[in-house]
Image 1 (cartoon, chains in turn red, cyan):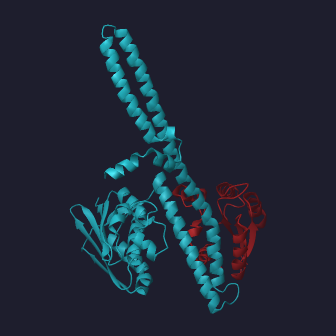
Image 2 (image 1 turned 90 degrees about the vertical axis):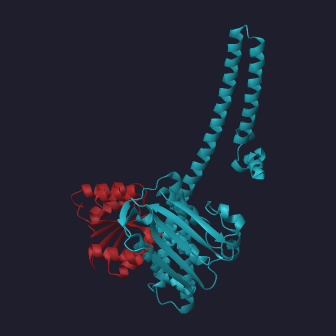
Image 3 (image 1 turned 45 degrees about the horizontal axis):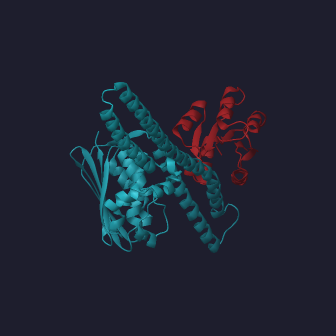
Length: 122
Length: 314
């Protein structure tokens, strides 16, 4: 079973993804802030990281930067899932090494799940 | 015309409108400035003619009056800066609030999707009906917020659209097909005529799509009962020439001068439709002008409206 780390401070969204991704046979680890997310990325060794950008303690850009600097975590694909849609933010995240950048408001949940499946495999 | 001028010159009105104290109202300050300029000119002339033999006194008086004028101009400039600041803060406020509203709204949208897909257990017909209403309302709210974000981008000039080269008729056909279920459900027919072999257009695809979507959405939405919408595209001189004609409710004559204003909704539309907040045409006009084009229209209440715009061929 593939493991997904979901770094997102909205607990409603955590709950929704937890239910849906479990149904799709993924194991999901929630992290409600950037610091916890970063440490879980090292300890839980997920196959994929879903990352929001506006996060307490350590923002998503910083998390992404540190993930990509660390030998242990730099190969893990990261899907940025956020509502920031400025060109500058998108470019910055992709330059830092994000695999995919998804603006939440523009995607249905089904489409997000499809992107996850495509990135990590079923 | 003269009534319009006097209403604009009404100091108390402007104080109320801008929420400023009277001594900071631009109209009041202009009035004072006018009085001061006329008085100082008269004083300078009187003193100048009386003390013509004493140039140092005349210089001193002119110098003092210049300082007074300078101080007034400074106060007026400051009061304008305050107005500009207030407008900027309002735009920033809209932008922050819209972005903040987006997150809970996305949660809502996705949770409704989970329910509707049967992901949390079977749902019956009645529940499906209510979920559809919930979904439609959350979509509507998303549209409104997107419009507000677009407006705040236009006003803060933070629109950084990327230019691409694409087929303009292709874009129009795509938008029409996206609206298919919407216009067919209302028994509306859409005719699209385009000149053959038009060259590609080089602007932001997203921005031009927003323009076509808004114009077509209005044309469909404000057609009551059966109707025909005719869309045309051709090249005239060195410009693309776009036309969209509907047989809808039209715009009352007295409302026509306001229709490109932000948050304006025409009186007859308010009778039929509660949806929308009056941003569509403001967005359309801002985008067309940003892309170097011009937009205009002709409309008659009860007969229909035609909108035209041009865009340069580069």
